[in-house]
Length: 280
Image (cartoon, rainbow, N blue to C red; front, side):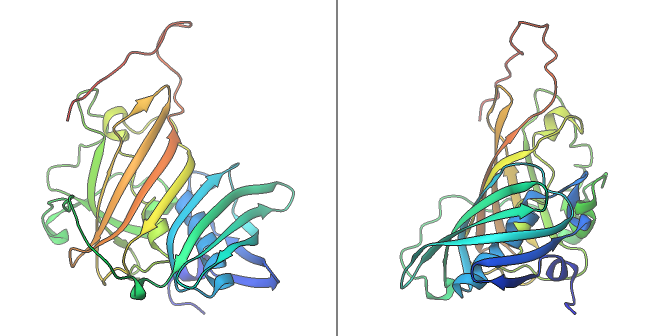
C-alpha cells in the first residue's frame, strides 16, 4: 500500500495496450468536483507510464465536463516518440458520461536537460513558513490535503474590493509530510485559492476550462514558494498565472489556466458590467 494519500489516490493500472484505469477520490474535491490539478496528475501518471519517461515537461488539459469521484479510464495516444522528448495525449472518461477531460503532454528526462539559463523573475519574498499564517478559512476538501501559509497580517486577504490586487503568495506543502515531485506539481499548481477572490471574496464559482503546467526542475524536499495572480478579467474570462519555487530557490514549475468567473453580473439587464483597471 502506498504510504501517502496522494500516491494512493493518483495510482493507475494498465488494462490493455494504451488503456489505463484509476479511481478518483473525493479527498481532492473542490465542492462536489475533483480538482482539475488532481485530474492532471492522474493523467500525467498514465502518460509517463505509457511512454516509460520519468518526467512530464509540460501538460495541458482541457476540461470538457465536471468529473465525479469514482472510476476513470484513460485512452492514451502516442503522438511522437523522440530520442530526448516524446509527445502523447490521453482522454479521461467515466462510465455513462463519456469524455470528461483531455490532456496532451511533452515528456523526457529532466536530469538530461542542459543549456543556457536566464531568469528575469524573482521568487516572492515571504518570511519562513514557521513565521507565516495558515490560509483561512479552509472550506473545500482539497485544501485539507495541504498546509498553506501566507505572510503575517494577511489573514484578511479575501474580498478586499476593487482596489485590491488579484495576487496570492504562499508557502505550500502536503499536510501528511509527502515531498513534492514531478507528479504532484500539477496538483499543487492548482492547490491555492483563485487569486481573484482577493477582490471579490469567497463567492461565485471559478471553474477551470484549460490548464497548462510546465515543469522545469525536480523539486527539492520541503515547502514550495508559490505566487499566483490574475491580471485580466474580461467578460467573465480570466487567466490565473502561477510560479513555483522550491526551498533551494529553484524555479520548478510555471502554470497558466483559463477559467470563468461564474457570478451573475450586477449590472442591469442589457448594460455592460463596470470595468475595473489596476495599473502595475
